Image (cartoon, rainbow, N blue to C red; front, side, top):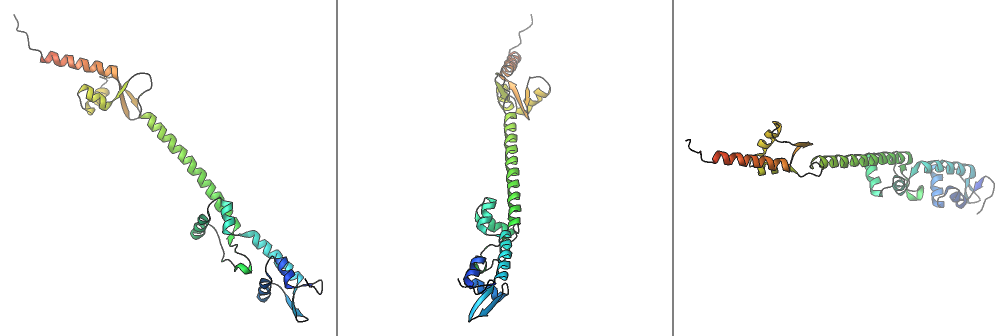
Length: 216
């Protein structure tokens, strides 16, 4: 490493200061980002200008991150980051050439905001899923017969036992002519009550069908 004064460094030392390759150092000089001078047939770089560029680039590197780093922050696959950039959810810049500043091209703050938004959506989605499961469990419970140790029949089964239509069974329930229990939207009938009603209907039918005794 050759330095002819305390104010000048060669391309190798400038590359170390900047974390780049010597060829990129020359590119930065052509771009005007650092000061280059020629002495004794060699190119040298002003140490102060190199230090300023290194500081500026450190700030840039703190702001801009790679797709892989963004995926680590968000906790997702790199493809998810790519889609978020395409949608405009993450701010990005046209990445410089890899030899000229690295591939970091995503704004760190927008990545962090996207991570927070994604975490919030995940939490809301989980909460909604729990609420759906609770609602399903509640509806399932309401569709079940009462749990009191008795045997309960639904309206369709009750209609079959009584030889009636379902609508007629519901009409009898509305008229309080047969005991029932409502669970949600369904009506349930205790089997013993249904059997007693069926027996009463059968007895009434036999009496109607029995021949009339002649009066003496």
